[in-house]
Length: 109
Length: 113
Image (cartoon, rainbow over all chains, first blue to last red; front, side, top):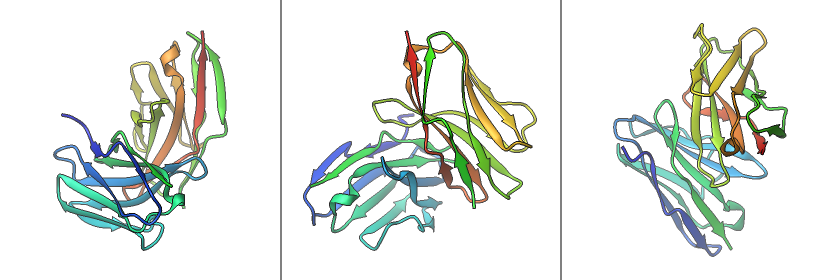
C-alpha cells in the first residue's frame, strides 16, 4: 500500500488565489482527517469525514475553507480566497489509527 | 474537554541512553486512546505507538514502549537505546469520544553522539 497520498507537496500562491489540496486515503479506511500545523498553534484538526460524510467541521477557520469527499478514495480541501495567514503545513490522515500523509506545505504571499 | 500536556519543550540525550518523553492527559471519558507520533525535520508525521484506555498491558513496538499510568493520567513514551535518527519532534495525542485527535505541543528530542 502506498500510504496516504497528498498533492501537491508544496504550493506557493498569491493572496486572493484559490488553493486546492488533495488527499487519497489508504484503501479500506473509512475515516479521513484534515489537519493544519503552524508554529503558533501546533496541530489543529480542521474537519473529518466518516464514510465520506463530514462529521465535525468545527475546526474549519472560516467560510473561506471548504472540504469535500466525493468518494472513499479522494478528498479535497479548498481555500478561496487564500490569505497569508493560511500559510501552514496541511496534513491528511486516514483510518482510526490516523496514518498521516506527507503533508502539503502552503505558502501564501 | 480533552487536553494533552507535554511539559518538556526540548530534551538532549546521549546516544544509546534510554529516554522518557512525558505526556499527561485530561478527559472525562472512560474510553479513550493515546498515540505517539514522531515528526523528523523532513516534516512527515510517523505513527509510533498506540495505547487503549482498557488495555491492561503497556504497549510496546520495537524500541518504543508506552508507560501508561491511568490513575495519574500519564502516557509517557520510552525509547530504549536511543539512536541519532531518533532526533525529531515527538507528539502525544489522545482520542476520546469522537474519532478526532487532540495533540500536545510536542517535545523536540536531540540525540547527541
